Image 1: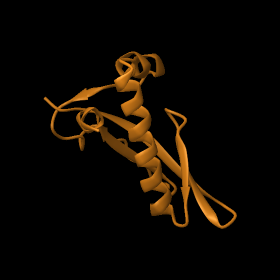
Image 2: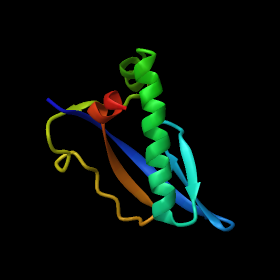
Image 3: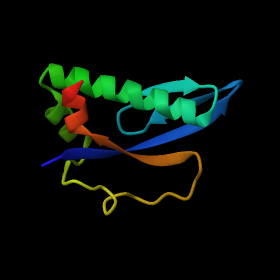
Length: 100
C-alpha cells in the first residue's frame, strides 16, 4: 500500500524572488514566481527525505517531528483545507522518495 505524508508549504515575496518553505521539515528554496518556488521546494524536500531514507533515518525522523505517515492510494480525505493563497498542503509520496 502506498505511503505518503502531508506537508505545509508557504511562500512569500522577498525582493525580486519568492521564497518557499516547508514548515514541518525546515526545507526552503526560491524562484522567480510562486509556482517556481513551490516546485524548487518540492525537489529540495524530496532530496532531503531521500537522504534520510538512504541513511535509514527517515521513519525515525518523521516520527520525531510528529509527521503522520498515511497509508492508502488517495490523500484527498486527509488534506487540510487552507484559504490563504500563500500556503498549500503538499502530498509527498514516500514511495517516490524511495525510488529516487
